[in-house]
Image: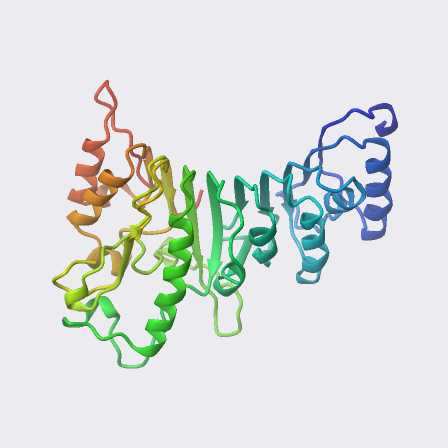
Length: 356
């Protein structure tokens, strides 16, 4: 069949094979269908390891694949070979989507972020039952080479602030807040992550999810929906230097094309990083990063943060911060009213469920 279709440019298959069979079939497909530029391989419903797509990538001419979509699971020992596959097409890849089958998969994204310089879409799916995720230090290991991202969806572990016995969370301490050495170190890492995201001026969709790990480094499986009420620390808060409170919201103010957002002040000194998103002028979708019913955001996100969002992101269409409509706070209701179309319809949506 493949030999009769030498001009195929996109291949979509869910064939699952033993590793040695994937090697031989991958070489054969690449030989008889040398024009393939798009690959969709595997099935999200099967907890299987399908290396066929990577073997096809390895056997095709270098710098040819533009779109790669993998659905299934990967073993940790597949990492080096998978990285080589992506490196062979690092200048042509525009979209990479990795969707887990039925397991939690810790993977490395550092090579993709470093070498795929023209990547526009990176979607690494994670939910409360399965998926791929990368550690924070891996995501930050190398500088990101692509400035063209318009859609970024990642599960990231190791983002929680360290807990110490008999020490209150920073946002519950009296002002001025004094951060512990471990908190200062973690906020430095998070600040670098937020700053990199804030520099992605073409970004329209941002969907980040914190992945909790236990003391053995295994994903903590949720007992109920509230288990995943987690927010990236101080990400959508404005800094309050006088109170010692960090904030990073200002880093994202340039995301003017942002349409979908999923997932500190001078008086309090709380950390805040919303300013890092100031450059995301095209942002349309914001999702996953912050849950407004998390303990930290109940304290750290106020009117000024929502005012900053509407000032910075004029194209925002979807902000998913709440689990249920009846939990919506007054500032978010105001944000909805400020984003209405010409027919009086709210543009912004609620977070209908923690993971979708």
